[in-house]
Amino acid sequence: MEQKTENVAVIGAGSWGTALAMVLADNGHSVRIWGHNPALIEEINAQHTNRKYLPEIDLPELIQGYTDLIKTLADVKTIIIAVPTKAIREVLQKIAAFQSEPLVIVHVSKGIEPDTLLRISEMIEEELPGELLEDVVVLSGPSHAEEVSLRHPTTVTVSAKNMEAAEKIQDLFINQNFRVYTNPDLIGVEIGGALKNIIALGAGISDGLGYGDNAKAALITRGLAEIARLGVKMGASPLTFSGLTGIGDLIVTCTSVHSRNWRAGNMLGKGQKLEEVLASMGMVVEGVRTTKAAYQLAKKYDVRMPITDALYDVLFNGMNPKDAVDGLMSRRKTHEMEDLEDILGAD
Ligand SMILES: NC(=O)C1=CN([C@@H]2O[C@H](COP(=O)(O)OP(=O)(O)OC[C@H]3O[C@@H](n4cnc5c(N)ncnc54)[C@H](OP(=O)(O)O)[C@@H]3O)[C@@H](O)[C@H]2O)C=CC1
Ligand SMILES: O=C(CO)COP(=O)(O)O
Image 1 (cartoon, helix red, strand yellow):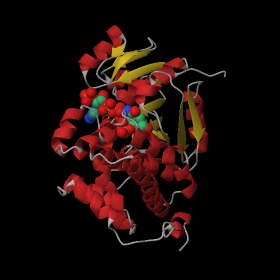
Image 2 (cartoon, rainbow, N blue to C red):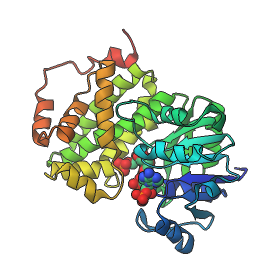
Image 3 (cartoon, rainbow, N blue to C red):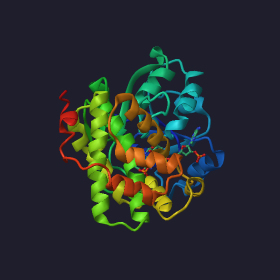
Image 4 (cartoon, rainbow, N blue to C red):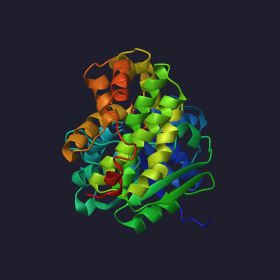
């Protein structure tokens, strides 16, 4: 496939930013990766590695590391924001302080902001004035950085209000190992990507407690039901939840040892305290903040989210994980498809 190459900036030099920089470099783009840790950027430039986040990987030389944000964005139109959700406003404020040309922002983070209950594209629209923001595109789907950086086959979805912008980002990333689909359902893509992390924490807890595949299948299936219930009330298409950013990302995150959310849940299930689990991870566990946001969203939209409620009690109210599972299993009996009307959007 003939592609026009360009300068692309990746903001965030962690696992996902680095793996996506590799995809872009494989497509021939000049990639500038910005990070706030000078030692890591020095390592990327001098040794072409990022040992903390992708220990086994050698990086293409087309990837250049930067710590100066102004230099990173010179002659760049498209930037990939790959920092944890809670750092997004901070980096956008830094960019807004000097940027004068409009940007296409591609966000690849998976979260919802607690309290404001904004999706990430909405946070970006709040932080960047209209004259600096040409388009916002989300890229999401079942895609562990560890496997993308090994160039293992991976599929993701892009979405935006302006689908022409999404298609341009599809062209920017797509290659033989990294297949990119489009989906116009921006709300569904962002909600599925964010909320699967809650269920992945739950799957990790279940495995940590010693429960088996039956319990995990139940969590994935009933987790998807409650994500779809909320998503549809927020305006998403129910079909999106049967796609890559719905069931696809749920499967990969609930079943993979690469998932930081699964790993954190696993440690919780084995009896460790949340603070010690997070301190030992060294990488972001988005599901913790997203549990708080989803708990608040469930109240706002009056949607039943029993797994999210149980996770909230474990994470923020000190509930014993075993008691949380017992609570889920002893809920009032019900019809499996009782919520179908909600999922299909009927009154
Ligand atoms: N890893 C994956 O496989 C995937 C991750 N994602 C999503 O991508 C997002 C980023 O995750 P990921 O790369 O994995 O996270 P990591 O924890 O691997 O890396 C996060 C990076 O962001 C940097 N960072 C944190 N806070 C700031 C800040 N205030 N200013 C500048 N840089 C900051 C960190 O710097 P430092 O090293 O100094 O802490 C680190 O380089 C998350 O929302 C995640 O859900 C989506 C799909 C796949
Ligand atoms: O989103 C991911 C894979 O699609 C990565 O999940 P974790 O953040 O749990 O590692």
